Length: 312
Image (cartoon, rainbow, N blue to C red; front, side, top):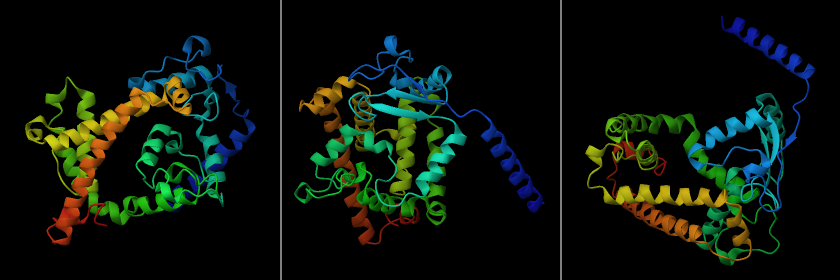
């Protein structure tokens, strides 16, 4: 039966490939742009209004209006003065892109979303983090252009750090260790759903926080359920400041004026707000990490903590 299924899949795939080649190629459509403002003025460009709370709906509507392949100006996210970005939603065409990227050899490697997170990358560089650019004293004038941004770039540093970070996160052996406690964290978080009906976004944030802690530390924080979340002021602050930092980060990336002011050396209120939030969250994360390491050195970790990402 497996061989029959395999032959059916191959035949189906061949038929689909054959028919797709006979179809008209996906045509690139250009969304109207303005200098420096890109396409964000929806009255001019014809795009739906940018609403951070409905960003998934935005791309669904964009596909309806402009098709599967379009060029749009998103300052702060895309490239150049007008933030030129190419959006492709046709899976058959995307497979061609992925196959091409898979065979790519030396840098530049594939462009990732982190490369567009200029406020976060700048914050990391200010803090001397290797994820942003590495310690300030290590800047090299002869560094490859694609490597100068570290993890926010597309060079060898990006590849090395990405490989290191994902090695013990996505492998089946690693998942077998942390999935059980993540499932338990999700089960406990579900109890808080009825009491959080009036604040679904906040509830989703707390659920994500509980799942993150179960994966990273192997610990059940139980923040999503209001009944068990009482008294956890530090965890609550960790969650809230992370959410606030990400919110202000996104607002900067979708506001063309923020990038213009940044490029001429002006630090905006949104950037200061983001920096303060991330500084607080990072301080708490660092404290939790050192406490975890101390317990690890003293051989005091639970079985779940021993299977966590930090301990692998």
